[in-house]
Image (cartoon, rainbow, N blue to C red; front, top):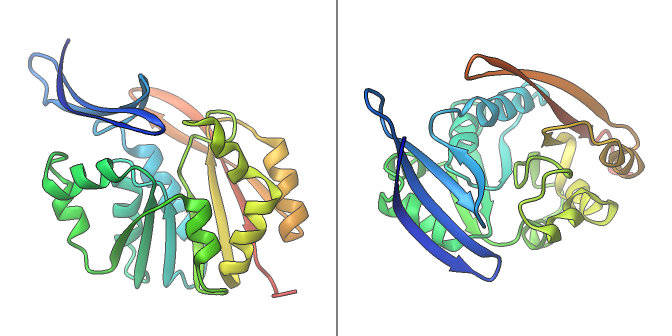
Length: 227
């Protein structure tokens, strides 16, 4: 196995690195790492796609969708594959990652971002939600971390707590939902969602990765009224 660095950048949150994994007889795989920790790659995109498809199935009319976290674009891409979606706002805090997607450093990036329904906003998801108009979205997908137990940055812990979840509730329309992807059960998140939305579900979700079965969770809460 050979690793070739494609791009590297520093932000106030630390280091981002894009690198290729090369193995004889196999296509090169692009890998994203943050502060030395593996985030995602272009080989196994099942979890990102599963988050989007499962979330979209929970909402009758997901015309306007927010995706928290750009990554390598696969959650956004799956959202935009649903023709019910009229606009998809992707909120990504790392400006350089957005640049890599736009300028072709991530080869599939320009094609993904060419969809006229997609808008990428460089911002903290907490700030973006606080500034959004009330009742303006049908679905919010949180793909910033792999759940509250696997934070990319410690400050992200607030995204799974009551204050931020109340902000999300305010931007959702009646019938809308928030869906949070988690690599493990997160009962505290379920309790926070229940306090804010009145009810929540923890839906087990199995994904096949590299000939192994992985068990993930979708934490879901819906807006049934504006009360």
